[in-house]
Length: 60
Image (cartoon, rainbow, N blue to C red):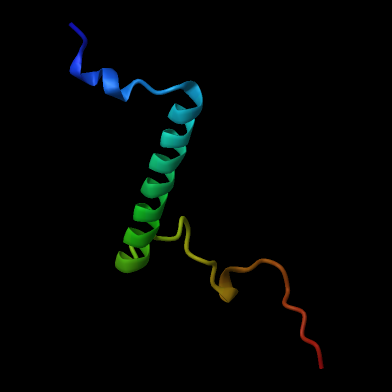
């Protein structure tokens, strides 16, 4: 007796297509989530101008 999952037997090419589609859907969902929530935080804050050790060049 055949397994009920026999209908899901895919060729290598079909498996690759399914994997690409799944990864694309995950990437789209994550992108949408981060755009809506805005929870991406910068790794390090930008240094303040006072903390700079190099002299600032002023163009006149």
